[in-house]
Length: 184
Image (tube, rainbow, N blue to C red; front, side):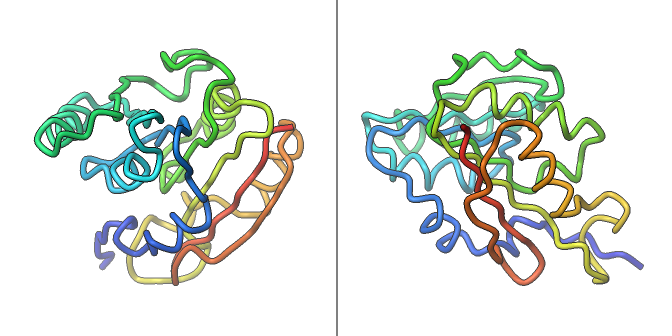
């Protein structure tokens, strides 16, 4: 029997934040942010008041939770954006405006992975970075079924075809890999 363990809890948050090196005044988007806004709130601290962090999701209740938490914690540089990432151009963030786009544990949940990647690329500025974190394709009794997991090699090839330069391939935790691309 498959246990449902939230994948984001298995990813080393501090290590990821070190890897992506968010600096003051950066514009960052967590595309497919979760209800806890785990990466959104960490990114908001690092980007400071001069930066903007977009929490993007297709589920409005998730955005409401993130928005409420931002208000409660008086975090003013977080903006929630409702979007279907599978539709190119649907995300209401200016094209080529992001320093960093995060796609963390989202691609395995979607059939239109190339469209989501294209949307992340559209939003990212030249020399901006895209971080992808996904489940490793290994046999474990929890997490998504192996047939829905995204093969790292496929992402690396797709990135090249879509005009991205592969910068780093790293372990994002015991069950996840991470890829950092730069938009050319």
